[in-house]
Image: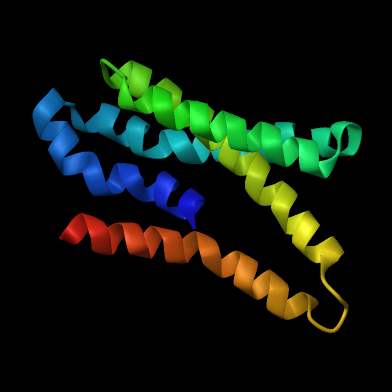
Length: 137
């Protein structure tokens, strides 16, 4: 759920950020897509490391990347730094989501695998929706 919130947090904060930092629309587009770009890269390049270092270790690495990226995002001084932080955070999220889907599938019983995958898959959009509700208040 945290991943879903993190990826969509930029869309919740974009109006305030755009007004505060006077961000042009094209840079705002880059900023909104930076996390998704990082997620794609993380899924493609980070997840295969699980076969070498283990799924648990990759989960810890991805969690560390996400945490560092979120912390660095808070201190970003300009749009370019925030874009870089969002790509970095997305890298960890992409690695985490792809890796955890394999873990959930492998550790679920044959009988409950569909339910387990459904619950796992629902976490991402639920986190995004909860972020939207919180941002609306």
